[in-house]
Image (tube, rainbow, N blue to C red; front, side, top):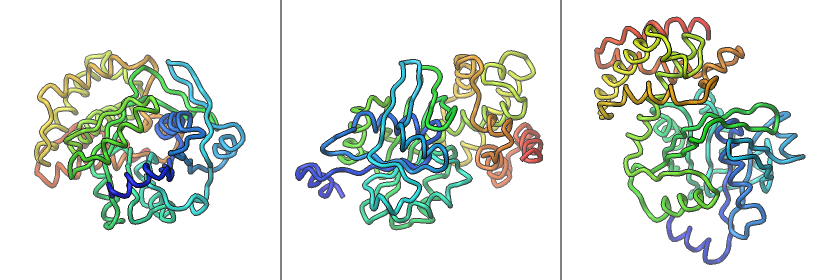
Length: 320
């Protein structure tokens, strides 16, 4: 694959990147890629979206609003029919985890022998799930740390200055992963290529599992998870339960990780909340099984007591 990649660059054949899922995450990073590589001689960016969101992007481009300012960018093509764009070199998946199987089916016309799939979905086992569906494909792993939402069709708004993307390949860092890291950096994306991506994924999973579960359970934003003693104790206790399950799964997270959850919740912008909490409030389908239920299941597998997780999960699944 590396030889093919180098040949593409040398012969000026364009590298084709598709973004599936133009919500807060995909819209933010996809918008930056489309802006940087507009009229590029070596990179093409494609969006796969649907409905009113797609119609606005086709007409006006995608508008991204952040603390740094705002911009509008158009991809090479926005479509709801992946067969229109053909085989891609890279596909970045940013859909909801409960849509993973349907998303893979949708993008099959874009997957060739050398296509790399990079998921940025919430959860600890996303790469493994994709590989079970596409065993012949190259699947990297990734996650994002960003508070970002689609606020109306064609418009993405991020809050705060923390917009990091972390990715990697469990077979190690190579020339292709380093090349892709540089491509993202050129688009002004705050990106880190992780040498231990599974640990990085679980570190993100840790934060989002605890905060998504509890913002939904208490019906509050990030800041409010730690502004009363009851919620602070629950947050810290749930974090400790997660760490026990992670250890049983062979993931060794820093002993100060529970304190970091509290500190990061305090530091996020006032009013900011998790996407799962937003989905609950809107009456939409949620990621409660991927973010909350899976920890309960793993705890049962390892015979670990997780009373806070069980209480939270039992309440949330009734709302689902």
